[in-house]
Amino acid sequence: MTIVTATRARLSAATLPRARAAMPPGYDRTAAPRIAHIGFGAFVRAHLGVYADEMLQSGHGELIRGISLHGRRPLKQLAPQDCYYSVLEREPGVAPRLRVVGSVASVRAGSSAALAALTAPTTELVTLTITEKGYDLDPADLEHPDRPTSAPGLLALALERRRTAGLEPPVVAALDNVSANGTLLRSRVLEVAERLQPDLPRWIEETVPFPDSVVDRMVPAVSQRDLDEVSSRLGLVDLGAVVTERHRSWVTTGHPRLEPWADVGVELVADTTPYEQRKLWLLNGPHSALAYCGLVAGHGTIAAAAADDSLVGFVSRLVDDVLEVVHLPDALVPSVFAADALRRFQNLGLAHTCVQVGADGSRKLPQRLADVVGIRLERGLDVTRFATVVAAWIAAAAGFELPGTRLPALEDPDAWDLQRWRVEGIDTVVGAALDGRFDPGFVAVVNHALRDLIDRGAGVLADPT
Ligand code: CS2
Image (cartoon, rainbow, N blue to C red; front, side, top):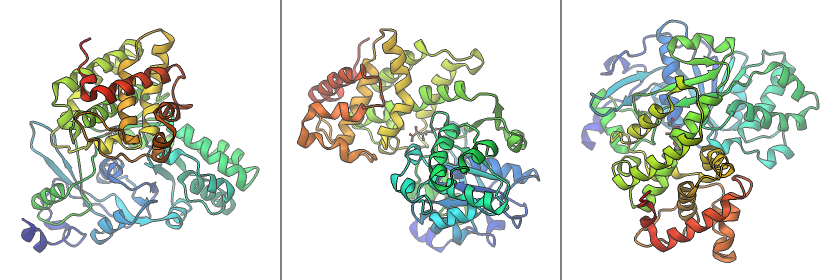
């Protein structure tokens, strides 16, 4: 297998005619890109990149300049391929579908490249997938707003430069699993902008739209096996390929600049709040729950955890706890959406690891669970299952030992703080982990759940109720 792969040509403009894929991009790619995308990971390739590809296929699309803020890997994967890459869709019961996407015109890395893309006169739309922690403000950017490294800092400086140069303000669309992502990003940008020029925040508020978006598609990190499969299907080596499911969606608050995207399935709505609650609370929350419970039960992937009846039982009851208190419009069919999410987790074609979904819990869990926990506490309803999930995250991120399981280390921006219990004692860890992020009434319940988990390990998941 390896030998065959090594002798294959690499995907590129020159080899594209040989690609064995549906609808190879035949459109012109010489126009100046009008989209600048910050955070060029796997998700954007399987999401925005595909929507943009379909727009280009239909004759009125726009190309993307991709920017990776952290690391040059995307550049190494895509530059030698003239930025062509494949998207392999795997869905249970149907044949895998492979397409080559051509909507990315260039990929660059680092802050200067980001500033260049954001201030390019042709940039009209800025999109971002910077993950939950990308919305944190870097104190260094507030101190030196003229030398930013974070996405909000770079945006603030770029907007100042655009204003000075008399360029049109772009539309800035945040695409992360963060509540009111555009609104939050704008507030972060305004904080830095104030340090740059006292009147810049007002100009930004008046001229730069920051629509809120809810995006959905599961795109795990690719493995060597995935790349080998893509290469053998495609007949060409593709080191920039991504693997995903068939489902995809993008709901955004309306803006005239985004209206043409409705042709390729983007939904423009007056208010994304119900879509956001449905996604964060009924898909991402249960996804995290499965990841942490999966780790406690010794599973490596979400699909393996979703095939474990006791975990499915636990997560289904957690979903019922959410549905009990969440009121969404009937048209959004919340219980159907939730059942479908559980089905999507079972997709064996997506080797989403529990460690990947479990990363950055300090930033993800408040988005996914805190509001529901708050509502349930207010109504005097039980929050034990939510506490078990949070305790499982703390146990993994803080490095506790559980009976019968060796928890893998988890990445988290607060990992260092969470490990301090080793010096300061176990009583401090829950308070530190939840501080300011969850209802204070939740701390005691999580404390109890953590002790139970340390005593009984995966036994706590076999909830009889
Ligand atoms: C996941 C999401 O890694 C995670 O935290 O819950 O990336 C999830 O796969 C997507 O939001 C699905 O749209």
